[in-house]
Length: 614
Image: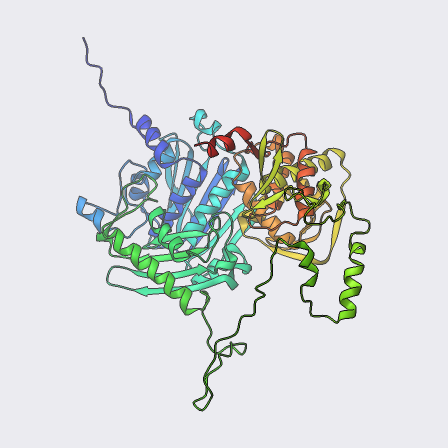
């Protein structure tokens, strides 16, 4: 039998490696930007078309490469960052493994133009599917420009699984945010289909945060600064009152490298304990400077997971730093002992007489079972008023549905006889609210429990769908138009669903870069803060499991219903509870939310009987 194990060709090996390193267009953008940073660039321009599927171009003013280096950059594991295994423990550069360029060239049409300052001409290299097509001198500016076209052209299975342009663009913007935040001294620009999404000038970190996430976040930022022998921690955290229901503004950086770290995230959330509801997430932008020998960044293909030698100790440092910042800037409520409305505590004088205990007056002859003496209870009114009230007490029940039984003498009355014969259902409080989250209502088979938020979500969804189908939208104009300043991700998303929102009754218009004016909201919504509804809508839409433009309107209706539904913790009046139940059972599908979550359940009467018979 002949040998069956053989070495893979380099082109195939590179495609396999690309499967780990290059997952989507955003992965290409990340790797190219990191190479520009390592080249010492202070200006980086990114141009993309069709969310990177057609073109990704990154231009920098870095050091450039010689003709030999430019060619070697596309070989597997060719790198200038490390030369021995020990170098892995003192890495401060972004890229070091030499896999990115080889992986990109294996699955795309790549063209590189690069020139060093000391060279008279630059170098042009054209590679398609790991095959070098051209290498020649070319006139170009100092630095490097890399064009990546037709990503995954030779791996159709991978290209088929790419998401919509909106989703892929969102991932690209997220990668740029992760690189731009820890490098405020570098200018970044991002153009998508010739439209400018970012133009981030050189600035300080706080200004960089507001440039990326909008001016509205500036008022919520609280500085953090802590210096220890283990790590130096700096950055900003958000005030609890500005926390959001979904994640998206939580960033950890170690030596200017973005990382995901659930354990450290718990340290942040622990510091906010009892300041936030359980379903809210504060913003934080935390930068850790630590000795590279104390971390290992080579544990994940994308280098977003990092191991720490003193993980528990750093957890304590992060937790303490955030608690200190919240206290220093008066974010944590404190007790003010100098309030003008303080309680006056009487102090006895030295020459005062002996203090006596208060007297308690009782009527030893009072018997609650003797109804004939009830009228003799002393009332602090004049005798004339007492007689008038006693003689006319029947007038209090004029027009009521309570049928009274004529009073009998105590000797003739049966002790088990009720004081009334019947009460109409309208006088009974049948529907109750529990923990400001559930509604309890008795039914023939037992006890029905309704989730109030999910019930409202189902009601609003069917109203929105009815509006979309009838195309008769009633818009309620705002007395004072609201200005929405969004980050680039949310602004692009809002543009994509703007037509659907207009058809549902929103009156929103673009007003400059990443800014919108809201003049009206759908008449079916009863909201005091429409900008909060839009913010929740965008978060829900971004995190939606469904991403099919064929059902765009339905998807917007689902997200809007969830964003507009009343929150847990909302206290409802009896009339509001009854109205919610009536509207729920007028729906076509009252049992489930638009996304299939259960709205109500019934506890059978048998379960109650079993509980009492144990």
